[in-house]
Amino acid sequence: MLVRDAMSTVVLTIGPTHTLRQAAGLMAARRVGAAVVLDGDAGGVGILTERDILKSVGIGENPDLETAGAHTTADVVFAAPSWTLEEAAEAMAHGGFRHLVVLDGEGPVGIVSVRDIIRCWVPVRRQRAALVG
Image (cartoon, rainbow, N blue to C red; front, top):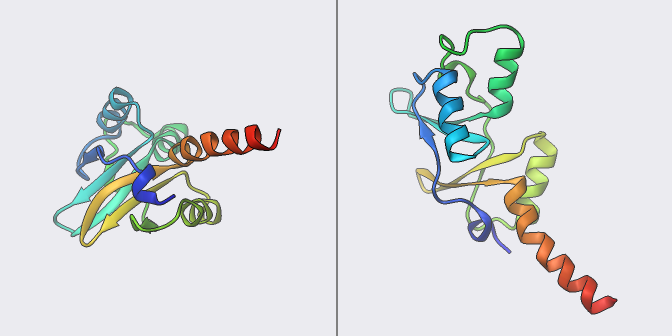
């Protein structure tokens, strides 16, 4: 199975000037753990995760003053829609993160999470177990 089969194509995108509180509110409303940060001025694509917000709040920073751009993960690893789920899982395990922005050409076309991968793998494993058992 490929990343394109598991990824979410409706992606929450925010700008670098959104506050962490705004980002957290949007993420909570959409029930997602990450937002793609599009910075038109810098020409970049980044990711802000629940973990990034938690770190900021945990050290006492004000979520009404801190911006997404200041907390966006800098060393983003991107996936291609043609990657296998095994390749995506390996990249996540190696990098210690739970989300990959999926790029096709210049821009983001989706996001894939550990949860997306698990959803795809669990039914297959159940079917195999039923065949073996």
